[in-house]
Amino acid sequence: MSDRASDLISRAHEAHVVVAGGGVAGLVAALECAKVGIRVTVIEASDRLGGSIRTEEIDGLAVDLVADGFALGAPALDTLIDELGLRDAVEPAAGDAIAVAVGSPDALRVARLPVGLAGIPANPWSDDARRIIGWRGAWRAYLDRLRPPLTIGREQSLGALVRTRMGVRVRDRLVAPLAFGRFGVDVDDVDADLAVPGLSTALTRAGSLAGAISQLLPDGPAPSRATLRGGMGRLVDALAGRLADLEVEIRTGARVAGLHRDDVGWTVRIENAAPDAAASAPDADSVAQASDPDATGAPDPDATPSGQVIADVVIIATDGDAAASLLASAGISVAAPASPQRDVVTLIVDAPVATATATAVAPTSSAPSNASPATASVAPATVYATPAIASAASGIRAAAVDDATASWPHLAAAAGPRRILRVQLEAPTDPSRPGPFPPSAPAADGAQRAHSATTGALANTTSPSPSPARPELVAQARRAASALLGTEVGEPRAAAHRRVVLAPPASVIGHAERTAAARAAIAGREGLVAVGAWLAGGGIAPIVADTLDEVEKVRARILFGRE
Image (cartoon, rainbow, N blue to C red; front, side, top):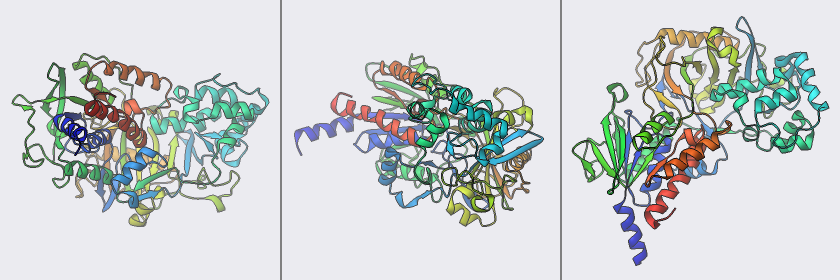
């Protein structure tokens, strides 16, 4: 072995990295450090790893309670999947059929989304578009072709662009439901060119918004999402298994409560998490527990009797609020982005589910815009509501309903006549406000903060055994699903609930500037890094890519003394 190689190995072994947060961002950060020989400790406040990724057995089915898939074609995530040996488990979505619910709460219409991008129709005269925006909306959208083309950079807001070019009905009934349903954001706050890359250039070239969308559509049908057969929890299990092989110490049921920097390094103050955040132990086969000193070969040599750990580098991989609190303890002021809360209720029902006239729901990327119900009808994978329908005033209070059995072939085969519905209910914006739903627990990941309060009418999210709880929430979800799907949803066989905080997408106006400002402030303190969805944007793929970029700087600093 050369002297240089020996020196690099020595530097790696002498360094200690503490990762605060055991979600996807934290686990990937830990893996990237550990596989070059750096000693790593992961501190996770809840009783389990994975953050927004949680696969549970409900009614005998392995069901993802929140995050259930990922974007195809993301290089960093593809590489990670291959590295973890999960390529054979990847299953593309059966279709991207999307519908929207429009109208009033007493007279909802459910119709498939017309062919287009981000809800913007390529042909506002298509039957699909007219079912939603009506003749009046179609005529208004047609006026777009008579307006002068918009020069590049003239209108940044997607909502404002669509409103001025194609009218309010297209914005409110086609585009807004997707932005609100997926991310909980106002479409006026979305950057047009980030949401639809190349839109400004195509608009200038085509002379109309519909023409620009037609130019940007993919050549043929192709799934844009995929999952892992057996659930996304397999990704977490594979990461945890690799970390165990690399002797990474993982402490669950503990949280990083504060940070202090001195000449020695970072002093990381650790406290036990609240009992409800660490009620049960994770799988001992895949996670090394801090309570077992033999689990990683030896106790942490940098641990102090007062619940502190000394680290050369601290990687904060929590949600935005928790990260802002930790950074404040280190003397860094960073504002976390505002994030809406939702109650995500999973229902297992017996009767097959389809939409009402709206029965003809076709994949937006493949079915022709004038396809008839007889030739294009498939079950929708997702039905989005307009923000007005999702509001508490409507009584429906649901932003979206996903049918996992319509999306994923392995679930459809396992479920048989059953359907797996995931209903996203708008949660109270003020956590102190009275209501039947508990506030969210401390975050476990930068993707979506979630807690595991059990609300299944028949099943417990932490156990495959049935356990009745919170029937009022399940009843609300059932009513909302019936309204948005346009057909009665039967009494659920089983149900589960998680409270989540949605991470805004990277396409929100100002996100890049806020991220740059936060990272500039953090960079002023040696040995401190932050990752997660509040910086990368929501979604597993961008989180993985951003984490890899940031951790590469950590490794370069430790091994070579540079970034």
